Length: 131
Image 1 (tube, rainbow, N blue to C red):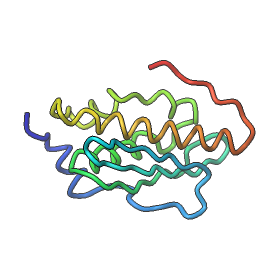
Image 2: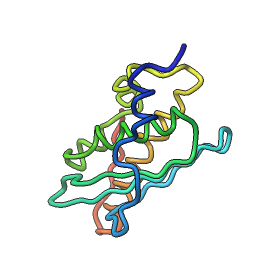
Image 3: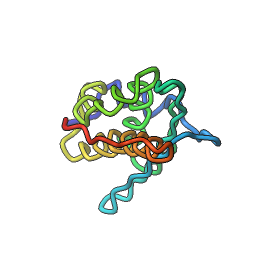
Image 4: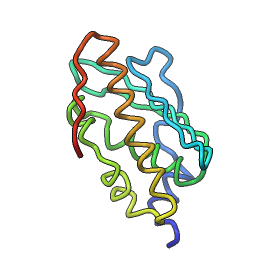
């Protein structure tokens, strides 16, 4: 299965790439099998994800999923962000080749880790959401 046009667009023109120097939460995830590493940075105001950025070291699918997760999450509440699933990321990109599905896992997991980091730093309970 070739990459969709949407995957190629997010790879060639990634949205929200970069670091938030004073991030409220940071999610760091990686896959040692393929070598992809993602850092997801969030800025939160009144429990809203007001900014989401990423730095990713990896393949085209890893960059595209990182870009897409920022678009899916920005403007959402923390709870809504926790409910963005791995499947949501892949679906928003019009699918991924089966051997690249782990990239959507990394992107969703990275966002969830950033939210978890924010909640813990602020002394708030972290509740795992079943997706």
